[in-house]
Length: 461
Ligand code: UDX
View 1 (cartoon, protein in one colour):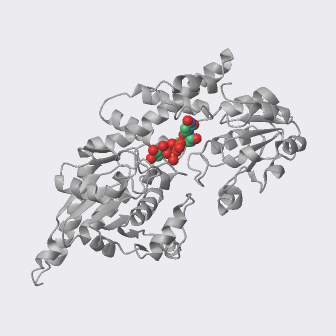
View 2 (tube, protein in one colour):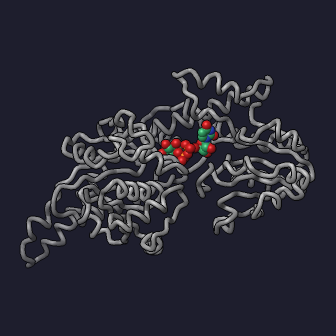
View 3 (cartoon, helix red, strand yellow):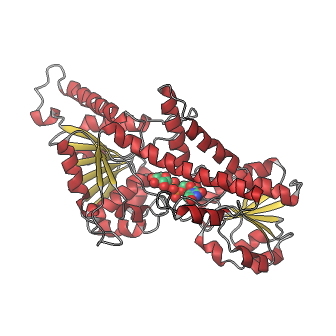
């Protein structure tokens, strides 16, 4: 099938590359010419395990290309994905101006046969109908420009606008985006048009049949068909539920800390109840990233717009804000005065296997420590090796873990990078001023860390 993906951020690029890998003919569009040039040369602008390899092989097979030419993309695609960003405004609302510009642009270039316009950007509930209207605005403007005074009547083909809008939320996680695309738990399609749904089912058939899945013998992936608004709500409700689940276990961790229980054991004990489930019960220094903070706030905002006070969601956010101060509290408890002390952060990204720093707990910690006059150093397997380190203020980014440990009064494990299980901690402890480690993800082996000379403090244990 011929596909056009507009916007090559995380969601757009992964979608485009994976759809081309399963056999579709994909054009990816971005208005950033430099980025398009980079991708045309076969390089991925984001770090995502497995993505570059798939990108290269699809390009070699002639099924994937990149351009800034929206008209060409719209002409090419039977299915047109809108996958541009919807960053949060200071009020917590999503900024939908990029979606609007793209929808208008699609309308201005629509011609030829039936098209399915798919909303993959996380847009406010109700946006599906709004996108339809904006596309129609674009169509009307083009018609007007074609029917100029004295001009010949435009060809029927040029003014035809036969399309449906589908909401198809994305559930992929950064760091395992390719895996998640090939192994989805479900596919959600929101539209009341049977024709559009049928087209989308055809597009996703190889994924539904698990042709590219880790375990192809599993039953087909469930496809949930809903109306537009419900599909949009599924996205917000999923992310808000997961964020709430983490805030819940973090709250339990804080109580564990006070009564002397171990939240890791508690999480295991509750997670084995199949009604609860063991995933997303890792206590730590709070959730971050590009989705949870933005989506929980946007849902709160929507509720508020419609006169409902979403108290549970508010608590989810406030527990997380408090959780962002836990590492600092523990440092103060151990070191007392932080002014003049040196704290080393293990990890900077909001989670492992990504180079994403958006709303990362490390940023909050750096700011808090700077405010109290502490010197902050950090080592991160990705950030330390990339240009990203130059954009950070208030922190000295070291190139290896031992240089990080050298002269530190305490370490804080911020990101649970697998590599951090293999460091020479005995050596690191010997280089530190006082070998204290705050394990912000309950990730390191406590007994061994203590054997290697560390005073170990976890979260809720
Ligand atoms: C999330 C959703 O999982 C995904 O479905 C959606 O499409 C986008 O948002 P992502 O932001 O990539 O994905 O990361 P995720 O792995 O969900 O982690 C989010 C945050 O929660 C991270 O800061 C992580 O460290 C934290 N987290 C996660 C915990 O603190 N404890 C857990 O048990 C799980």
